[in-house]
Image (cartoon, rainbow, N blue to C red; front, side, top):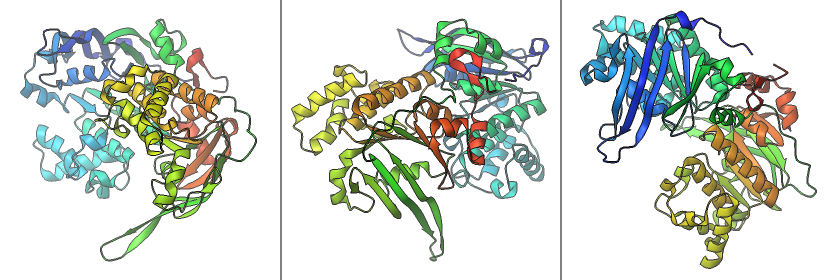
Length: 553
């Protein structure tokens, strides 16, 4: 694997953090969120700050930018030096002048960072308005130039577009353009690729590296994805509980991590090596999909419209005890297929056979008895669990609806808690009292409370840290072994698919372009689109668990 080999030791220091401490504010028993951390970033260098959720990564970025939430967190000591200035000593007005001009930030979710009622061109111009006095014509010229630098297509059209009219990757490019238009000395990127599919993610990473080369920018890249780290980092700092536990050049860290925590993080990272497929079970498929098609007819006020084929002639079957993964980019039709199968939306055509019943055309009343046979786990458990209900109430809702007594349902709920690795007393708590990984375990427990034949997991681990992700994947694997359920696993991460799937379907523009065992699809792909997805997967050449490059690299 080719790592970047540039002599940063002699480059000038762009940012130096010394013994930075951040604690909770207005609290007699203040808790340290950051505990005397030291980080050095040189000009042209990419430093990756990695760690699990709650380790302090994002708090570090907010402290640098002077954006700590007032009344909640406060700096309790240390220095953050940029151009010889301690940023912690500057007043709010001076920090506003430095943001975008000398130090800039790309946030994780562009749709929340961009103003939904302003055209994106105007939003980029707003940065120039705040820091320059350029005439209107020169401002637009600068904006068009930076939009071209970030490789946006049809820049004149996009200049006049609103955020909702752009794809996720295009919105992230707008954020990058806003961050770099004044050529800051330091760029902070806080999880900028987490929500993107692999090909868009790969494009954004290459774009940041290209612009860094052109402008000599120092980059602080915050992420929990070690695959991304392997692709872009020069130096890595590993955080845990607000402390730096290890730092090293990327190659040293990947080949010989020194701390147990770092080794555990790396061992949890999924690789593209497919797992051994389970044997085929005898009997009929638990789920059989034939000719599934979903067409959206978008009509204007005047009756004109066009058809969008979100899914077309989709066919596959899953036998009990096996997992079939559907992979592809955003917009490929993965989630549309999952929602049609769950009958959360109505398919336009085709058959969906669960057990012996075709549920594709059933009305609401006729569908009700069949819902217990197929259940779903969504991407974000906090949004899928009722925040006002105790966990126990969420778990017993389904069984109560199907005639179980409250006592039977609660007894079963306690068994489910044990099955997913949570204590029985968790039933009396609310969703916000659990971590993200624990909430996803609760969502899985709720789904299997109905003893379904088929479990649909729609991006069920994409929002989780790699260590928690590995735990949830193992949980699904164990549950499948014990209960014999069939799993339909929707994901944009091929590395995750390799760890859990027996068979893989690859979708593009609503159609299946490849369908085979996971071993064949991921090791011997036949379609050029599948090969492009694999080539774009971050860290694809690295066996993280064994701290070595893959032999096929």
